[in-house]
Image 1: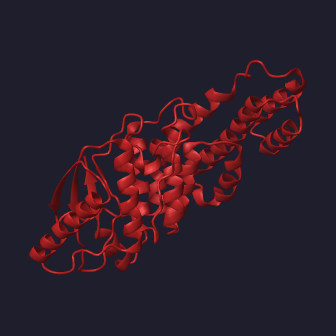
Image 2: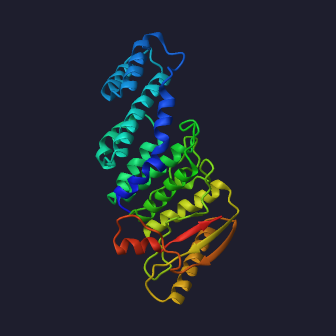
Image 3: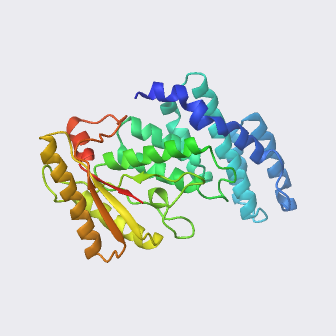
Length: 313
């Protein structure tokens, strides 16, 4: 799917919550601000309403240098900057502009505050140009942020969460190297390793335990994925999983069925050797469940992504 066609649907899926959330967040002055910061906070409110990003950044810098401005004040000002950038991007793309044209502005907004929409859009930009490692990182950061009730008090629609999750999985499968899942602020498994996402529960997880062609030997990327899977299962206390093996479409169906089952059994044996004591069921699906891919992949990259094992609970 092209960037243009994805953006056609973006306001209804990824962008619809933007304006309401960011406007509701910042129109009321935070209570308890130090008197010495009153002029700066008033300037922030005025600049935010005017969409004056340059003044917002100047005011933030002045507040950083003012010992009377608290960390809470700086956080509030940072949110104003991030929200202003998101609003500008939303307005332009809604009128037919290119999301890619805003990459620099989105990147420059990162130091001012965390927002799942910012990371999701940077993930979209990286995904479209084929930088799957960066896309997987950004999408997982988006999942972490939207799953944090303090950072995202109002959760996006379940369909939006599912879209971000699916893109994160696809990007991680396509990445040349394994992209580990980040931890949450409390140190729990996050990103694609989180157990659930504000009402969205994945039915299956596309863990990129990849294999060499025609073999049950995992790739170096697959080894790192396998270790992460082991650690996530231990952290979550999961007592039962189903491993589903897959192949690319090269070769006969009967041979691929046997190979996919052998791959699932190989992963099961590795997990048991690493100390996983839960029940493991194995299934081989051969080439029957090809991925619905939207990334700009070569045939070699696509076939490598198809040689995988999924985890179902």
